[in-house]
Image (tube, rainbow, N blue to C red; front, side, top):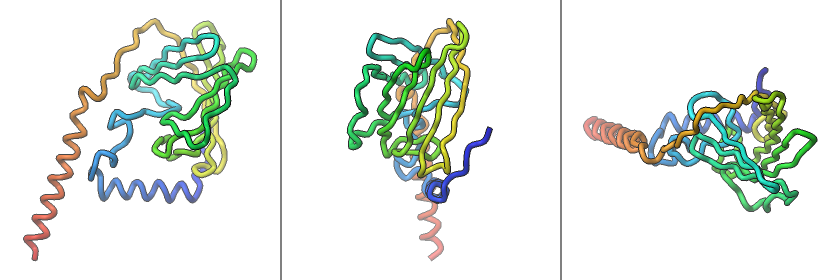
Length: 201
């Protein structure tokens, strides 16, 4: 499948962001991505890679998706409560779950203006569906909507296989020496550029 086209607004927004990264790649930590700064890895997680396991557990009123990547825990109410007020914005949105037959449906709204999923931010709306199709397999289907980013909603489906492997700690901050190096590198480039400009006068 293919994603629908980006809206003109989204193309302009993403082009401007790419140009900013090219001209000012590391003026301050906020110029780097959320994952690179160990702040947040976002939802939905659609790519394969490392630390991509989930542990899923539930009570009578909640279901929890504990992600190995960055040890995020999405705590999803199942008791029919409404979404938070529009003024409350969260990194991974405000999820609400319900059962439709044997399918768990999770709807997430209220994403932060600093959230990021393929260019979508605070207008992102997710509907995720989890259906057990075999004893060892959940079909994960997500419909992504953001009229400020794509010309129409789109849906992806990934089969999730169970495993007996252990979930490991993702210790991002403790070993994150790269960010300091990136910022120091940019300061070095700035000094060299400043010296070069001074010498040419």
